[in-house]
Amino acid sequence: MGSHRSSSSRWRISSSKSSLRHQKKKKKITEDDIAEYLAKKAQKRAAKVAKKLKAQNISGYGNDSNPFGDSNLNERFVWRKKIEQDITQGMPLETFSLKAEKKRQRERMAEIEKVKKRREERAIEKAQHEEEMALLARERARAEFQDWEKKEEEFHFDQSKVRSEIRLREELLCSHPRAKTVTTEVVSNEK
Image 1 (cartoon, rainbow, N blue to C red):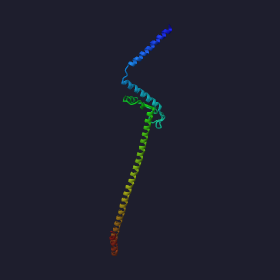
Image 2: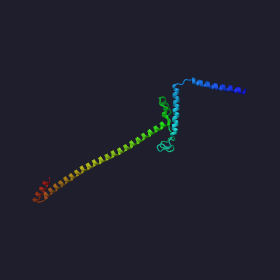
Image 3: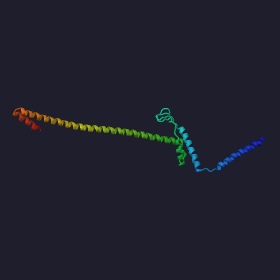
Image 4: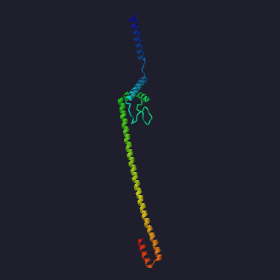
């Protein structure tokens, strides 16, 4: 009798399991269900990739010491809503694989290197431009100094003429007539 009960109870359990399977099969799977399933699968895959790609140091900073105050700096961020949106828009699951993430990471690093190189080039260009501007300023200052020097020489020359004329006038008032004619000739020759 005991064996009879066990076989009948087994039959009931298996029949209840099969009825559950039939109920699940009867349930129609909608597009939303598929999208939700794919989104969850993509999120799981992205989280798994994030764990595998966990970095030790980010640009020389660790979790303990960084200027950002972020204790989770080395952990990868998984943007679940964006992944869900990407899947609903038809992005394939392969884009969330480890290989694809490493490729994107290499592309980002290459872009960062390009930006660094461009920044260095701009710094060099700026230094050259400043050097050229300083050179031009020195050239202008030198030209102004030469003009000023020329004007100063002209001023001293004019002043020497004026002093000579003053001296001659004073001599003319005080000296012989013969000396007057000689000095007058010298002054007229200078002009």
